[in-house]
Length: 235
Ligand code: TMP
Ligand code: ASP
Image (cartoon, rainbow, N blue to C red; front, side, top):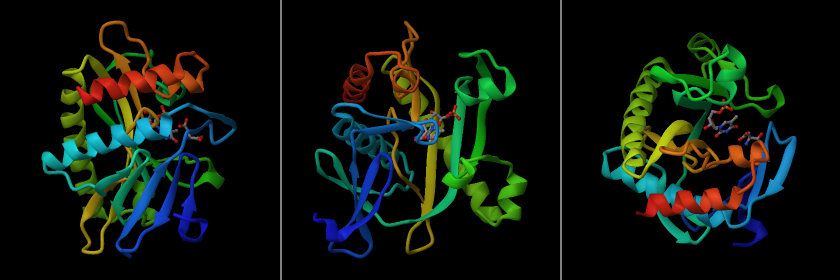
């Protein structure tokens, strides 16, 4: 993979073209950013750990009937993926209150929510990825009405599958972010990644944070948290 076939470089991943027009390779980087890129750093071995964790979780979802972008893991830090046209919306699912919902609405960190709470964020760095309501999604034509209903159904199903998977491994799935797109046949497919960069994971007994919050908040043991999550996921 040379510079010639780099399609896009994001904050945490590089997307490469492959021989097949319908497939791309996503290379996971050790680079870490937070707060809209204002905080920058590196987390040793994050790329390979996140690639592995994401591959295992996408495979688990496929086995449970969820269509995902994953084709195969081709290098330690690189996943071969179906090319998708992504919706410009991120979906956040919250089972417990943490992060921005505490700041916005005054929830106590760790409060169990009555039911999984879905929030949508517009993917637009220049606007700072603002939260949007379904009315905004319709007004801006970000996702079709029926497609949004399907996305919401998929998100809740994914939450149920992952919550159980992590509970069995002594981990609370506090919240996480998903991105969807459409493949060449018009199917809605899960894309991007599921990793400690995009989820909040807490040890179920000690409540120790095992995710990117350790980097965001300078809590120490950052690399160890990613290593621990890989160990639990591989169990
Ligand atoms: P938040 O509490 O900051 O809104 O984050 C909710 C979840 O979404 C959390 O698990 C981290 C994840 N997330 C991302 O994956 N990318 C982002 O850009 C942000 C802000 C959050
Ligand atoms: N990745 C995002 C950023 O770079 C935010 C985050 O994960 O906290 O700002």
